[in-house]
Length: 364
Image (cartoon, rainbow, N blue to C red; front, side, top):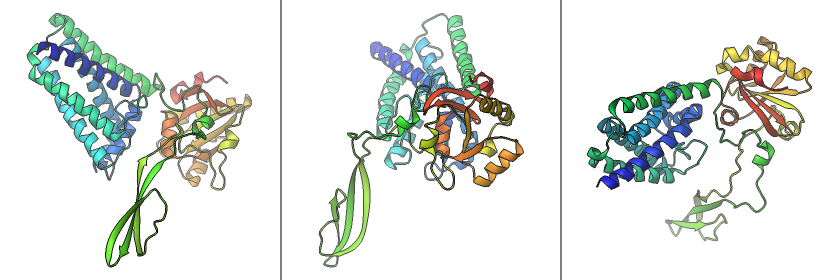
């Protein structure tokens, strides 16, 4: 039994540390995922949405710390039963999401590894199996070091996790797994190859035939039926190829200027997904920075999902000399984990990204 427990200990501990670290690297991203879960139509807990960031930090720090606790054997009963409680909650969440098709990606491994809802649920079932083994054989989970050393390591893991979370929130994720990372070309990321897998859909047609409702399943073609059409429902069997960049645009109320701006040799995008919630300390730095960028020959634009009137008011209030364009809020949250955040591009390729705290470090 102790060998099975030993394997389970290493497997669960390492997986929790890796999964937790990836989310700890991007707590804002995980908070956006929690907001999806809290929203109406999923858990229907909208009152928790304002606290999503705090909850995300607590959850991922606890996840990393529990993984470390298990590996070093710190307070085995507390650790094992805490792991059990956490995995039971996540298993319920991923099952609910998969069964009712509510959230397409659980965010278990952030942007580093995308899992479908059912893949996430399967992963949690496997973890639940090994954690149950740890519960049964908890007496075999022994400390690897002396009491003082184990306690110090446990405390250091907690402090290191909190410090790392604070650092990435005040700057940007240490590792960028998203499609807008430095070196990525946004235009290429939106392109669908000619040989890409096409989406596969199933259509269920309902007709009234001889006084009875009958269903006819096709791949999209209209069925040849001698009856009265009632309705049709479609279901995606295979999503096919999905480009890494979706919903990104640079638009006015009248035209789409995405391609035009992504051809610019020297472009600065100042991103604020919602002007009303942008950090005041960061906004205060924008005029000086944008003026310097314009003098260096850069084209400077703002991107926000806020309305046209709000953009004009914001520009006038802060005496900014660049215009704001429209982009999807979710896309902007993905582009850069800061509001305001700065993205420097050359012909659509990201060459530098900066949190507003580091705006002085942008090379012009």
